[in-house]
Image (cartoon, rainbow, N blue to C red):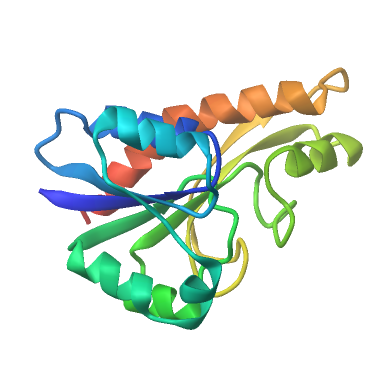
Amino acid sequence: MKNIVIFASGAGSNAQKIIDHFRNSEKGRVALIVCNKPGAGVLDIAQREGIPAVLIEKEKFFHTDTYVQLLKEQHTDLIVLAGFLWKVPANLVQAFPNRIINIHPALLPKFGGKGMYGHFVHEAVVAAGETESGITIHFVNEKYDDGEPILQERCIVTPEDTPEAVARKVQALEHQWFPVIVERILLK
């Protein structure tokens, strides 16, 4: 049984989909939720699902190996960023090479980088007059939204679409594809 650790900062809808996907799996399980935001919905999900959760401290995360050691002690096979809003420090990336993946709510390299998350991405897509958006699932490296792409899936953006409408289309793709790709990478 392989161990998945989910890092999340918000409501946790992608975390829930991954938990659901692996609920009865003999291949893998969500072993730990890591969160950087007190009161985030993903912490409620962890409690409801009986999954241990850790609320991380910024100084320790960026300037020590505390959490690298914790993740190794948990026998972490794959780290999944599911709406995690902090850049992953180099020591963590180096400790888990090609074992950290992220989902971005746009077709990278467009609309990526620092500050480009959630509604900011969808607002930028609409403002740019894009005719499509989608998701990019990618490996994590030391730069924001720069790692090797694993999968991109697209949705149409019409001139009538609001950022909220684009968000709904993109979230549907996230929920459809993220658990499948997590399993694929976990079993490599």
